[in-house]
Length: 457
Ligand SMILES: *Cc1c(COP(=O)(O)O)cnc(C)c1O
Image (tube, rainbow, N blue to C red; front, top):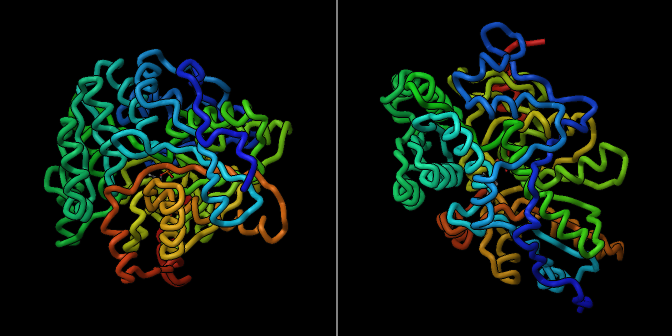
């Protein structure tokens, strides 16, 4: 048994919660490519973005220069209700695997929304309130983002309209009820409440919806109603900025014990938790102060990094959002029936895309059944029932720890445990019943969607 000098949970005190977010773009030599106005093909200006997004969030979106951005007191006070999040030393998992590696995970599931998404939801709701808006609109797939945003909006007394992908709306009634309890208005998407929704319904009757389609409806609802703006829970630069709190806390905790992670692993849907977790470490790597290995883990069924292309693409099916340069499978990629709902987006954060293109970050894809094998191993020894999304990171952390067993290396492995899986029991049921399958798109399928990419640059 390892000598257990480092506590199982490294908690920080309340006043050790970072006072500023860290903006990794300030340290990137090649900045992420700018968002483009789909009409002009030119970089979207602040004026063009403000009808859609809140003003201060637009400033954060476009800010490539300021390394540190102060966390307003109102947001900080909310953070204190559920942060700092613990950094856990996975002694029991290490023992189970009989590995010489030291495994740490940053647990972001200790709040009602059950994920890290609250870190950005509260920030976005605060800026909307400060601007004097009536409310915000958004989409949600699996429901974690919608839940987080409902909590944030009820705290600041803002109206919250959530377009929820129809299949999830029907299959996840409990998530829906949590959102309604926090006062959100939840509409299954596509719906007849928007033009784009009516168009999609007419073209594809009986469709169960997609994230890209729900985004288009939420954007339309925001720009057509005075006093509303659209907010997004991942992908954007501002979201990665807010999520840097994950990495800053993790680094402060590790520094206390003089631990330097060798490998840092996170699951990647739109890239927000991974971008937040690695941010301060990546900063050191970019500045040449330290070296780390970073690994993004994505589902084999939605492999944006490992099988996508780096190109300008639409963020949504309705093609109403600005174009973003990112690793993408194409905006009308049809997500497969994968149980990790939070990892089914066709694109990837422009910041992470640029870092990946620069070789600063690796990516691997993993199959659904092996992800649930890892989730089960983890739950049985560490006690926490992990979200399927988070379990992608667990899978690769276990793989890395097993490699250390072969080589005898005592590597320090850090991974992001983004949330809990209480609302994913249908997925666990399929796994336990042995009916879960693996879906891997063929090259032909991917080429077909890729051929629909907008022709730019
Ligand atoms: C949404 C979500 C993710 C994926 O989103 P990112 O923006 O890539 O972080 C991962 N884990 C959980 C629990 C989520 O809710």
